Image (cartoon, rainbow, N blue to C red; front, side, top):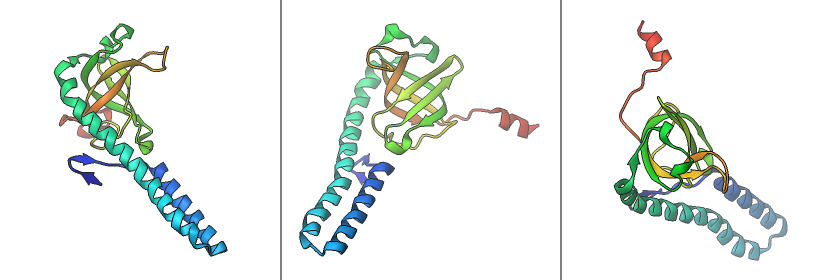
Length: 177
């Protein structure tokens, strides 16, 4: 669903919860024939759908408002340069998506690599576009620790976008021979 220029996405988990509660509501009404179940249950099921959509919209909007500021102050780096002394700094870099995690929760994490190394990139909302393994991406975000007080540096991503570059993999080069 698109609201203005913001694409609102709802996670699969939230959809499963809505369907589960709708089924439970149906069975509860069917077994009791109590109309008040429907009077309170249907708005409740609708809220189970609307609340995650509203939260996703608000986080997407906030991220979109932050992008110009982050682009203005971002320091271009290579992944190997990122270390614990850079905590809190805004950085930008390009790399290849080596792995994706938790996209079904709308809280994706990516393992991004370049020729100098690799780093975990976390987003706390869904990205504007679908990012898959082997995509070449541009990342914009802040360096944070993996855990609250400890852990290696990771990137709290504000924006991740595919860039129109093609990487040659071993599979591609073997096909050309």
